[in-house]
Length: 289
Image (cartoon, rainbow, N blue to C red; front, side, top):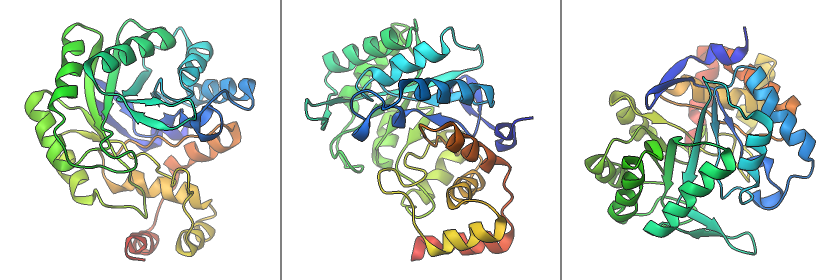
């Protein structure tokens, strides 16, 4: 049995997925822009993820742009029945690779159709609305207009379920008054824990929480404590960081990304890593360093 199965499962809309998934962002070129350095390797990673039991892939058509979804289609289409592909809309890429807001009704409609076309799908399982009032962190502001536009695309049958990304608690509350929200995707990891209370609230309400940058993103996690715990357990620091996230709450779905099959296998192995109480105490203290 693959270590993926050791991660447990949680509901994602009408589907149930293993809690260790795969994030496809790193398959594109540097800065998530342009083609991959090694196309064959990118395809191999996607196929290996499925072989290892991954049934939840996180992506977006603004990765590349377009290229990551095209790689997913080339590697995996026709898709396994148990595979859930979650995508994001609400941003676009500038010619220089910059990340720009794109959540007018017309832009969101084009984005949904771009995702459908490049993934080779007739309907998207889950679409996260990425809020871009601030590119780097959640910022207050009403999301009624873009979320209502996305809900209309859901009504048309193009989208099954809706999630939110880069959002505040107030925006989540506003979103839930407009329609069902099945997941929230925010920046969170062992050292960046602003959403601790939010995770617990969402768990109570049966809503999945999907941390992006679970390993630090563009600035990988570095900590002497993390390294020390990893050495004691005979694991890598990144495996320990992932195992901690899986222990954090049953509604946390982890989507580490990589463009390497070797690193993919290391990430998957983290689902079977046991964290003893003394290790958890040391790791929990990282939030206060």
